[in-house]
Structures are given as C-alpha cells and as structure tokens.
Amino acid sequence: ASDTDAVEDTGAAFTADETEFNVFNTSRKLQAIQDLANMLRFIPGKKQVIEFTGGITQTGDENRSDLRVATDAANKANMSVYSVDARGLQGAPPGGDASTGASAGSSMFRGASVVRQTSQRDASRDTLYTLASDTGGKAFFDEGDLSTVFKEVQTDSSGYYLLGYLSSNSKMDGKWRRIRVKVEAPGSKIHWREGYYGPKDYKIYNTEDKERQLGDAMTSEIARNELPVVVEADYFRVDGKANEVYVPISAKLPSTALDWAEKKGQKEAQFDFLYQVTEEKSKRVVGTQRDTVKITLDPARFEEIKKKALVYQGGLILGPGKYKLKFLTRENANGRIGTFEDTLDLPSQDPKILGISSLMLSSQIEPVPAKSKEIQTKAATTDAKVAKNPLAIAGDRVIPSVTHVFTSDQQLYVLFQAYAPAGSDPSKLRAALVLFRGGVKSSETQFIEPAEIDNATHTVSFRLTMPLDKMPAGDR
Image (cartoon, helix red, strand yellow):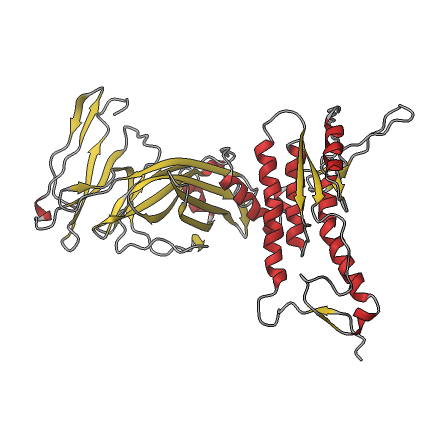
C-alpha cells in the first residue's frame, strides 16, 4: 500500500486550481474591512466591528499585503475588529465530512488526514486572530454561544482611555511598530492595540503597493492635490454618427512642479495617467483609460520645455448622456498624485437639423508631430479609435488651453465642428466668432469658410482666429 499523505480529490485536473480563486476571495474579504474602516474614519471615538466569518485563508504574499493594508486602515480609523469564527465548535471526522472530497492513500488510517484537516482549520483562523489582535479587538473560536461575544465587546466598550504619543522613529520603512502599555495599579488588567504600521516611502513600494495606491485614490471621495493638474473634456461626433460621441481629454501639468531625474546627461520624468467615466444616475463605469508616459529630454530641449506646461491627450467614445469624469495622474518618481473631477453633459443630436460640437479654445497650434523619441507611451487599455482626430486640421494640431486664461500677446483660436443635415450642402456653411462682456458685444470676427469638409459624414470643421493685443483684460 502507498504510504503517501492523504490527498483530497478536488477535481483540479479538470478545473482551474481553486487556490487561484482563493487569492481573490481573500482579497475581497480584506478589502471589505478596509472599505468599512474608511467609511467609519470620520466618525469620532472608538468603533467596534464584529465580523462573523467562516475563516479567512491566506494563499500568498498578495493576501499578506491586503491584510496589512486592512489593519492599517482600521487603526487609522480607531476601529477594533472582533473576529468570530461562525463555524463554532467543530468535530473533525477522519477523512472529512460530506463537504470534503474523498481522500486517497494510507495516511487516512494513521491520522495524517485528521492532522491536515486541523492544520487547514487553524490556518483559516490565523488571519482572524491577526486582524483582531493588531486592531485592539479579540478573536473568538469554538464558541457555541454567541452571547459571550456580545458581552465581551460590551465590556470593552464600556470605558476606555484614548492615548497618543509622538514617535521618535523617523524611518519611512512601513514596518510594524509594536506598542506596550503599562499601568502602576496592582491587580489591574489592561488590553490595548499592540501596534501600527509606520509610514512607507514611495521608493520602497512594490508593484502591489503602487497599484493599490492608484485604486484607493481613484475610488476615494477626497481630492488629491500633491501634483497640480487641470483637465478639459470636449465632445465631437464620431464619423458623423449622432449616437456616438468622441470625448478628447486633455490635461496640463506645470513643468516646474515636477521632479526630473537626470540619467546619462538627459532629464527624465514618468507618469501614470488614469481616468474613469461613470454614468451619473446608475453610477456604472462606462469607460476607462490608463497610460504610462515616459519623457526623456536633452538639456537644450529641457530648458525649452520647463518654461511650459506638459500636455497629455487621450480620449473615449461614449453615447449621449450625463456622466462624471475622474482624472488621476501620478508622478512615478515620488508617488505624488493629482486628481481632477468634472461632469460631462453630452447632448443627443438630431441628424435632421444642424448641430455643432463643443467649442475648444486654444492659444497654441503646432504641426501634427511624428512619432517622437522624447515621449514613450505604454497603454494598459486600448485607446479610442476615430477615423480622423477632430483636433487636427490641415496638418496642424490644436492644443487646448484647458485653463482658458490668455494674454494680450497671444492669438485666440476657436475650434469646433458643424454637422449639416442630410441632403444639404455642407460647403455652404459659414462661421463667425462673437465675444460678449457683461451681456454687451465687445468684439467679433468676419464670417469664414470651413477649414475642412467631409461630405461623406456631412461634417464641417472651423478654426477661427482672433488677436488679443487690442482687447482689454477681463472675462468674456
């Protein structure tokens, strides 16, 4: 007879390894603790959370990182977790009960299978104990009467002292820092939170830490402004289709606010750009885009660029409706993040009547650039594809102003598209620019012909120009 350990028949030969799925199941359980802590963070005082669970089994380094983040979030929120193994007092039939697959091998007759069962049960409790003890709570195992749990929590919450101290440890290593509390009261028994995770420098973040930082910033309702960023979103019809809208998204970052690294005599900077669009009513995510951009400049080019703002351009294809846009950028040298939020109201246009796109204001026009060695982009998702970029006309590209602030030594460019009704002649359309101040017309241009005409889609592109040297300062 074989003397191998008992092995449960899980059907893994015919299905994906369930361990792979357990990684995500455990992550979701710990993420729920983190989300709850973040929700309770702004409620003053100590919070007690009782968690009833059938155990949490870690499957690797991924889950250990999740546990650490959940514990840290609970401590910052002054939230103690009381973990209750809802399975209660369990018997362990040799070979397992009816919920366990049959085992093979001789070890089921010499106790190895029972040892394995006990080890699995204990492993599923380790995380519960760690989560409870590291947040100042308690873990309850083999409890057949849950009233004991509520009495313990009630006793802990009946009275407590809130203590604080200033740490002299300046290391940004993110390591666990243990705390010990003593009282000079003979016969007293005290219970305290055993420690906390220290702050962690971005330079020692691993890949999971960096991804979690992005995810937390994207889902948080709190704006991040360590990195200043301004965003503009416009809208144009997609190839003349009234039910599809191309939304070019432009972001500007001041070069002076960035940390440029110097490598081999050149200046380098790297960014993550991530934006998400959700439907206003349903809160459903309808579009996402993520790009990692690396910029490499020689000294002469750097001196030129540092006086200007860096411009990022992306885009999404959406249907008419009301949306919420959240844009996030992260500087990968130091982990600084900037977020920007705006609403998008994309109108539904009737193809039987004359329609127009949004008006894009600019003070900068440049030739459409060829593929540049200065900028390398790695896209995590597929870019929105349109037959023709509406920002490019006759070989030139319009750079959106974004801030809509202009000086007297600049030219004001206005770009927009008009959509002629079916059966009409789009070449007969003309456009002019009129500016008002305080409800009174202050300046205007002459009517001009289209810069480009697409007869197949009845789309006409206009680019109007107005000098600002004679225009007095003020809002228009």
